[in-house]
Length: 162
Image 1 (tube, helix red, strand yellow):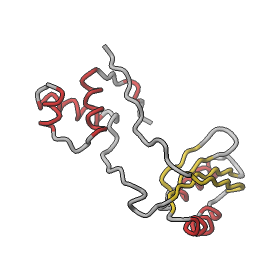
Image 2 (cartoon, helix red, strand yellow):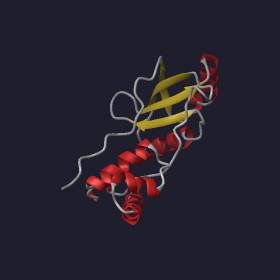
Image 3 (spheres, helix red, strand yellow):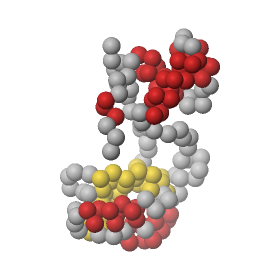
Image 4 (cartoon, one colour):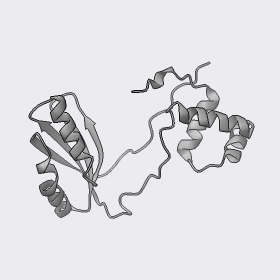
């Protein structure tokens, strides 16, 4: 696992990250103009942020509603064992469910927190029967329907190192 904490970010790095969060398709030329730096400096900084894993990947943030996913479900799952074998088996299986958009290993009452997108309650029932109830080592599934998303954003940017 890479240690990302070693890279020190200055004000230019932070400005690049903020601009990229706003619009990852911005050209190097426009980014450089916006930050008042030369394009080659901007490109070099951007490449360094990518190589150090600060920028993990570029992706499009899709509108779930526009794609017909009318509901979100947050599912707490408990396993019968926390052995490496059980955790690996569960994780390998859950990533294969297309409607799973997030999965977190948890400390606390449940072992995993899974977020699904579904078209409606009938769709969730199908996913529950065909996938969730068949996941390996599961002893308890507790589902909660999200009524409305309040916040969806990128994490806050760190302070620049002087």
